[in-house]
Image (cartoon, rainbow, N blue to C red; front, side):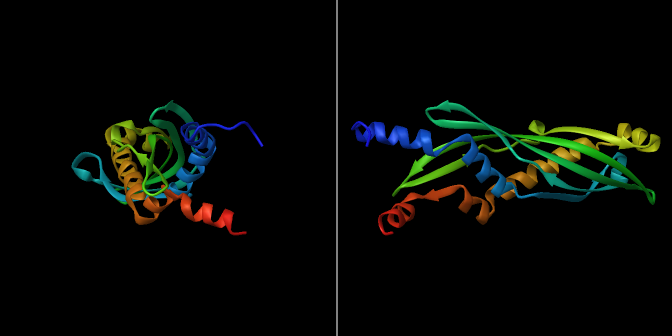
Length: 184
């Protein structure tokens, strides 16, 4: 048994030890899921092309940014394959995405932890596209596929965060856990 501390210090210790980058990362991964699918989306001059994107969401990189309020910065990576159809011809691309998120931890009544995710702008999504073939590279320069992908990915992330299952995953009710610990 350790030295006695004040309730205030207990609360500060609890938050600091319970809310770690690893736990926040697991929660973020649960909200994000494993798969990203966007499209079809119209791109290019006069929206002449159609893009469908699908890929895998990687493990988020999470770091503590500040203590008051407890804030984390996270980067959610994804590897996405794009199929662009123009005039009946298919062109393929690979995109490496990095989605930066800022998460703020709040306490709520009666005894809950809540992870708030600041609203993501499409401008914040980093997209690095690689074209498969010369025609695809030329098309990449003419179209706005990267901007459209950014926009759709930002919307996809916002929808996952605001989805009822995403909201549930971002709120941790501690009283049921305490009740369980006191009633073995």
